[in-house]
Length: 105
Image (cartoon, rainbow, N blue to C red; front, side):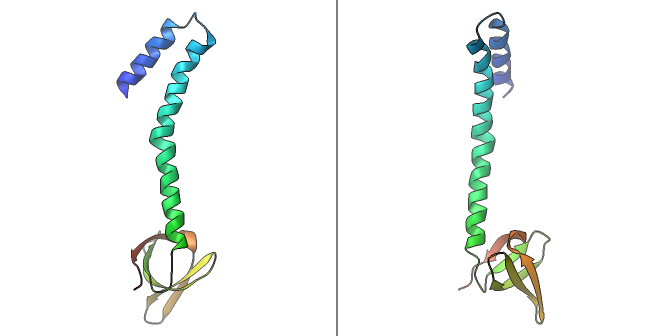
């Protein structure tokens, strides 16, 4: 990354008196690098999370963002009811589910 930065700085210095296109090339390269290394992986992670939340079903063992582990008792469009002990159910927003530990058989 440091080498790329040095190359971009040297190109900008050489084209300081040049055209607008010469000044835009380093910016376009930086944007391309950010797009490849930051934006695309984040989009993939968001897609996997949406798919995980859509696949929740009764009986799945899940963990919440707060660290509570429970079994899905009921799934609505926005809410999930988790059974966390013998006689304790807690209602969470679906987005509070961090991950599925075990899928229901």
